[in-house]
Picture: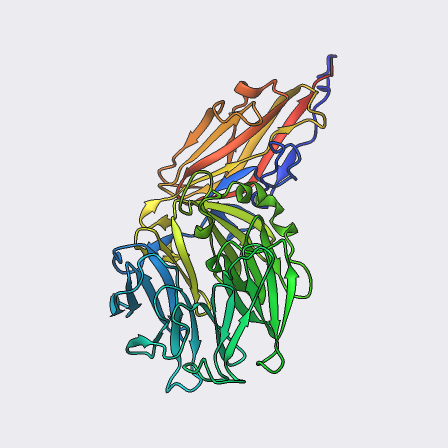
Length: 469
């Protein structure tokens, strides 16, 4: 009696059910940990551990006519935007102008403060126009404030601004008093590189002061006990809007993306998976970098490659420790309002409500997931690719393409091997991937891409190792 002989060299299936975001390593992906993508676009962690489309966004009201240079909020209840030199508030139905004649290019900072004012005011500074205040009805110049004050921040019942290398602070609980001796005043911050201050952030019992190449902390509550301490003289931030406080942690963009809790040097270990993107920031457009948060995730807009405006958004899930990459949003500003609402402004004068729906303002979102090279334990061993499949959900109208590549870094060598656009949608469907084009490759990369919502629950691959000759 004849028996089927076992096929030698077939390895157990390798299954991914926990998709961990992107890890864009410098060695073409050969050291990328299992479960990570080598590159990724418009995918998010909202269905973790499954892979799914990023949340959508929709236009809030009408276009504002020019670059959005500020997104502000008054008492967490009223959203404001500054674009094309016009300060507008969102009424819940439309944008309503509250001030005109402002700079059309200077990025704005803001703080809410009452002190000796009749009500809580929204303070705005941009370093070009005299600082302004909004009292809930009208906008007027903030009396007494530094004429070109910038980076306004509220901390320990004082307002702070910076001009050049000088920090100005108001009198205690007085928004319009910047000159009373022994109460209001200035602190000059000299450094060897001669740089100006580019950002201020208050919190955790001190004010953090940023230059492009150094970080300092201002401790104390007033001129009688202020102490200025250097944190680092080789780390700084690209700009004020590239710094965000998320859940008590400062995140900021420089030659790396750092997080800072105070008390030690800023850390960048968490951002190593996206360092290649950060290293690819256009050095002539670093002032366009911007950071924001929705309360859970942190977002970093960067001008990548030769772009002069932000063309990528790096999303960091602080709970899962995973990174994702979005594109096609030329973001200039982020802001979070209340517990869950968050917004972005762009170069074209649009303000978008983020995290709504599943389209990019009505246009189906294109997404992509590119694997690192998969192969045997040694890349010298030839491999016979034996089996490969996916488990996915695709609702009606969505599409999925599967492409394979025998090269680790040549993106002109993709072979489209499967394309699916189900009319009625599919759920938990097993999609077999044809392997004829890569059957005897030492390694293979897999690209999944498509338009519209999807969920990927499992990616399974199996190979047969051939002898080394």
